[in-house]
Structure formats: structure tokens, C-alpha cells
Length: 224
Image 1 (cartoon, one colour):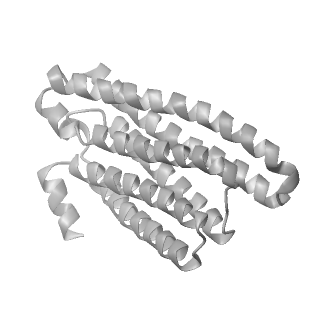
Image 2 (cartoon, helix red, strand yellow):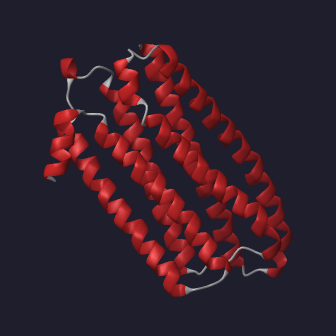
Image 3 (tube, rainbow, N blue to C red):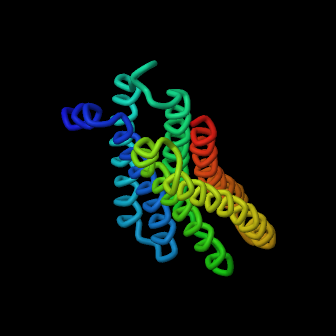
């Protein structure tokens, strides 16, 4: 943990940026897990799930140190509650990724062939949203240096708008997938169908979580 303590000594922002990077990596691994089930390979799926668990463990270690060492009061250049709000959303995303990975691997969940192009686009949107949220959080140091104003603030506002757009696109994709899955209900195992509906919902929750992070950053800009 000494490296984490060192990060705190330099900047209280660095650990949450590191946490966001791990969260985005976890989302990317989840996409890889789904792609591995298109050409079923239990060993490959298990390796990816283990990687997701390892990333979660590393993120939890940072989470603990953040909660213990995050400065209070005058030592914080912004509202502590906003940073904790971002951290809460990151943790929710990680928990959801872990939950989805267990169902996908444990049940060897396979998406019907005709749905795979749409589902792949949905996964890629989820990965893009996670990376966009991470890149927005990465701007916190620069925002502090510029007093949450100027070109840096405009850049973050632009990224927040992109997160909102991705969230809206996700709603459209979710509806399309639900309609497609409905057509297969009679030919699929009932439990398989129920879990697939849930997975579609959970992926939507992940994408919505990235939009919530954008909302927190926008609130920080408004307070500055």
C-alpha cells in the first residue's frame, strides 16, 4: 500500500483517477467475456472472469485508502461529497460488472445469432461510455489547476455531453434488444431468456452509471 500512500501525498485526485481506470478496464474485460462466449471456450471465459475479479480487488484496495485518507474541510479544494459520489458510482459499476460476469460465465450465456450484431454494438457502447467517464475524471487535476474554468472546463463539459448522448443511445439499443429477444422467447430455455433480459438491464445500469459520473462532474463545475 505504500505506493498508494505516496499518491495521496502528491494529490488526493490521483487515486480516484486510478480507480476510474480500473473500472474502465473491468468494463472492457466484460466485453471480452461476451465475445469469448460467441465461440465457446470455457477456459478463456474463466481466465477473463479471474481478471475481472483481480481488477475488482485492486479497485477495492484503492477505495479503502480513499475513504481512510481523503482530506477533509480546508484541505479539500472542492466538495468532498462530490468525490465520494463519483467513487460510489464507480463502485456500483464494478459490482454490476462482477455480477454480469458471473452469470455469463457460470451459465455459458450465449446470445442468439441474429441478435449478436446488435448486442456487440451495445457492449462496445458500454465500453466507450466507461472510457469516456474515465477520461473525464482524468481531467480533475487540470481542472484544479485552472480553477474549474477556461478551456479545460469546456473540454470536460463536452465529454459530459458525450456521456449523456451515449446514455440516450443505450436506451434505444436496449429497446431494440428487448424486442429482438422477445421474438426468441418460445425457442429459448425460460431461465436463459430471463437471465438475458437481466443482463441487458444490467448493462444499461453500467452505462447509466457513467452518465451519473458526468452529472457529478457537472455539479462540481457549477459549484466552482
